[in-house]
Length: 462
Ligand code: GDP
Ligand code: IMO
Ligand code: MG
Image (cartoon, rainbow, N blue to C red):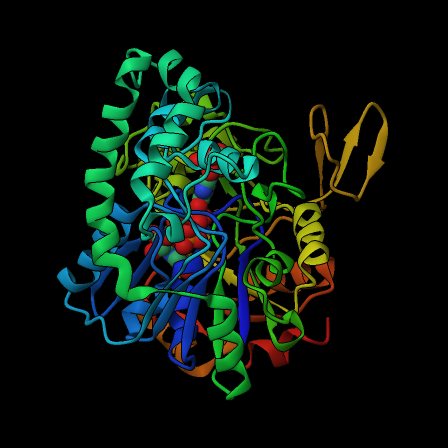
């Protein structure tokens, strides 16, 4: 199967887990957007691996490619590879890095960390915005091709000169007469990376299309997610790349008609960083004070069940281990949002949902937003500017008891029907609200904790 895998909300839906799972049947896994702002977690053979730029298929020993619209941090590439081997997996397949990809330079990271966007948007400070700005400038960018070419040193000096004001204002370089020295120091470090990377550099458009023509199968792994997309997301609180299924085709130069679109609907949305979040439980300010691993007392859990939404949000965050895989920041948590999912289904032409982290909602009563309301006006569309729009919840409250390990294993073995009734009710409503069937239900972080059997068959009718 050829598939493109994208996130439906604001990221961290479990793309790493689902791509790793599907990679078993795939010859290639290709990252098509973003950079090391992403953090994709895979749990396999009892080991956890977090990848930031290398595609998740590497853990299954597949061929992997890093596409031309990636913002590429060489250091992260090497540390990702090291994380894979340290966890005991082997790098077996081919590795391809597109010559057109843009390199994240040290000044991009410094500009991001010190810039306005890091506070206002809550960026990951990985240099993505500044690198994207240079890409759009077309005159101040450094591609992989530049980095591995014979005039890299001259190119860096020219770019540093063009960016002189920016570099001096941000105190990355003290004065104009230091610019060449700065550029040469960056050159010394990055030309060494280029030497190590040369063996992998090529053209994704040619290689991937040739491979598709030979009948090889491919997974296109999205980073970030639909609501963080630079065009269709909740601007300005978005990332700097196209995160949608259509973006995959545009970014890689492949024919999307050859691919099934699998989007990940996390069972509840999360958001890390600033921006509107209509169904948020509690507030970001409160979430920021929380530490990973804080447990709720029995009394607090009872309060959450009785309607304390702040505590419910905390409970979901702690049970779901919702702390960033890249920055460690607490993720904001919210009630499911069918308005947002319907929008994502439309934007991505989603064929099938993979519903993840549904186990986290066990034992917790919750509702789902079915519309938004503002000043007496109601809509089932996802507004461009979310300010002031409040969620309208469906009348149903969903609930099912915690599943034991035995029940989870039985569901994996026996399929959809073995899932708790309350869970199936929620899945059924999600599928009906989005007019999109589900093909997978993930009930734990491990690769095998996934219900695949009978899911599509049972949900297609809705
Ligand atoms: P990604 O950025 O979309 O790849 O997602 P992240 O890796 O940043 O965050 C997802 C987190 O949820 C990771 O820690 C996964 O191991 C974990 N995870 C994925 N699927 C499930 C699931 O079905 N249940 C639970 N409890 N955890 C999951
Ligand atoms: P994965 O692939 C969640 C968010 C940041 C910030 C905004 C802009 O793991 O789902 P950027 O550094 O890209 O300029 O930050 O986007 N963001 C993510 N949130 N998961 C991600 O990736 C993200 N990548 C960026 O928190 O709000
Ligand atoms: Mg992530």
